[in-house]
Length: 306
Image 1: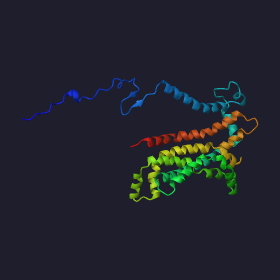
Image 2: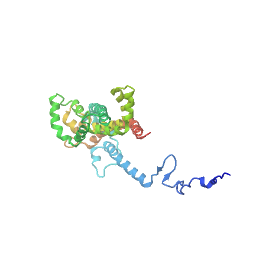
Image 3: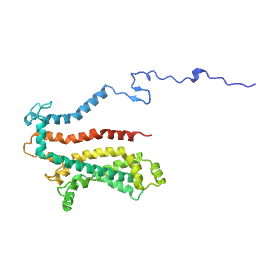
Image 4: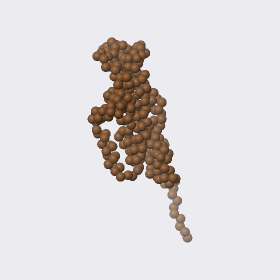
């Protein structure tokens, strides 16, 4: 005679009940594909304050550029745009010769950005995934250069640019900044996690050369970080004033050097200065509008781990 084990009743197989607050819409967490933290009134208030604080300098530049000098210096100052914007923009454009300055700034910022992305990506890949003697010491030396103030190299760099005949030329601004220690360190840190050794080994097994590996494996993996580094480099090169002011002359300036001419007089017209500042900001806004989606998309693609 065989014995059978008692069958479990239905209540024993039922799943554990969810907490009472889990399904309520008023809870801070919602169940679904993932848990989402809902922002409260304080979160939205903080975002509004930060947003207004970020937009206000640009708005004030627009307001000051649309009034005359006397109205800008009044107390209290104006808070709404006036009717002199176009005339002030024309005056700033003609007084500082901003047309040539904008072209020079695009050349300088574009060349520096392209070279930084190329050299820093290659150097970051070498430091992150390649094994060679002295790699740690070289990386330490690269990081140590970040602690050196750039003002210390101004005099020898100026003498060097003059000796090779680049004084007053755009080459004197472009070549000293073709690669930066921050870019090398940034790309190295990113490629350490984003580029598995298995991909490189698989490419070598397939017979790929080092150039083919860099083009088909390293660059696609580094694209999100390259977009961010390119954006930061372009903005920094576009807004740089100190070294271009020393290396270039008034006949061949970048945009920031040309804007310095507007405020160089004893009593500068602040409305025209603000109009020039507004002109210098518009190309950066255009870059963010055109490439902002690609930059954000690259960051999100690099953040997704499969």
